[in-house]
Length: 130
Image 1: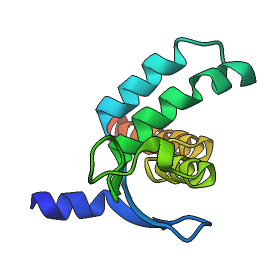
Image 2: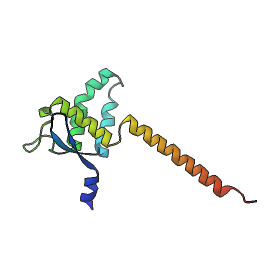
Image 3: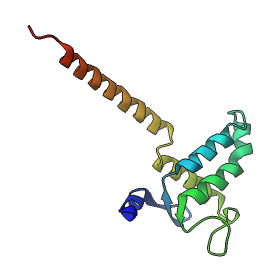
Image 4: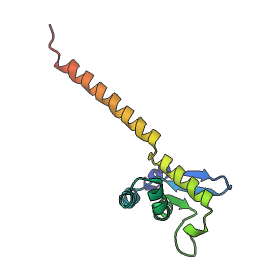
């Protein structure tokens, strides 16, 4: 059952360089680390440039399953990765994890629809029969 769950949370990504990676959805621990990093700088382009190395060092080791990224003889170092591959992986991880603006809009739309359904259901059960 654990393996089935893990398979649902992973997918293969082929970057423009032709490199193949297996990524997973961002775990809560990495997401919380990201929030702490973002809180350190103002939300400006300069701030984003300042934290980019920290972002890469959190997201890629936490979310790239194969080949593993990190420190050690059987892993690819973050510094070994081509910049384009790193950026494509981050974009793919964010999208797969539902952390894009489009995903946020979809969640808001879903919540609005669910709210309307709940209000209609409540109104139909509280209406008094004649």
